[in-house]
Length: 487
Image 1 (cartoon, rainbow, N blue to C red):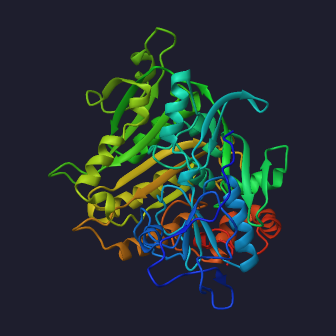
Image 2 (image 1 turned 120 degrees about the vertical axis):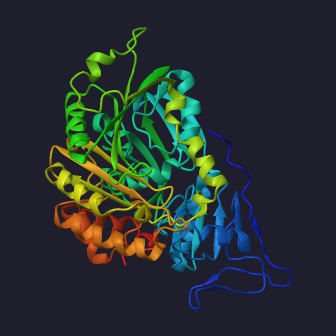
Image 3 (image 1 turned 45 degrees about the vertical axis):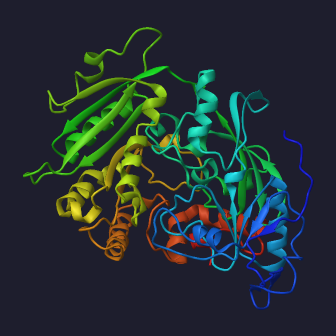
């Protein structure tokens, strides 16, 4: 553990001649004649600088803009606890922000405090009392940083998101799905222990056996009951290389039939799928099954054994051997390209649902029949891939109750020439209602405008325990208002 620094008040960003002090709960504004004199001493920095506040009022979605009153860059976990106690006392709303990759203002707050978790990013690979191979990660660390710490030791987290530059705290607050979820569950299913600060400002540790109600209310809990400050995550042996398969299909049904086969027999540790836009001059979407095999000791995977019974379009497959880290970070070149051409900075009205296996072929086929490239934008991505329901154990990560469920995601970009972002949002809500009527659940990282009633329906049987945890651990109802869950 790092020694605790000397505690002090550091408040920056004050305009000349316009000194600002503590929050006035009556006027809900900062006012007074001294530099935030009511704020307790801190190890880090509290800023009211307009540039910092504007940055915190935006996210990857570029759809919602809520301006906070101040931004905290904590110098320690204790800063988070101190400011949450202060904000609870004065009824100031608070949101924790990781990498700002939310798409619909989930980590924003109007006239409140943003806690920028990026300053809390320590990583320690260790053997300890909660697991033989684990890593203790502060919430502001990115998954790419976790891998750089674990892979040299021959270890890696069991489940990783496709984009590695997300914060650990951010994905654990939502769930964390990836291509290995069918074997290892979501990222939240691989957490051994959490350190959190509750909405009441209590810094505490929880696990499946220690304060389990809090543990289960935080993982996939959308930041409603506590802010994750550290997670202990189990690790598995990491291969040096992988064999990467890209197999192509003419229809949704052909793709999902093979996905079901390989997920049920477990031949691939990684399975995903995509819909690909029609080639120039063509009208039909094509479909991709993406899979990975690990070598066994020095023996490479047997392609014939792995692919022989699959019904992809023969002669179109692409097979590569890649270093493990290169495979995991395969999106990095695409992200740099999207940034260079401006697509990364455009609005992203994403739509993500988990569908029952029994309806996925008909539903996805009907959606794709009406979908045009303009509906998802020039850099839009469409995902279709299966998860095993039995591997999803956390109560707040809601999913259909069938042996297989499918993630269906329309990761839209409001590119020039595509539909306007507002029209994409309207389409998201209509499509969500269709999916919900068929037993689907939102995977809550997208841009679907829901009411409080919608959230109660979403959480269903888990709602009473979730609401009780909210009352117990965030009694002033100050945490994560941008999610819109508890209004």
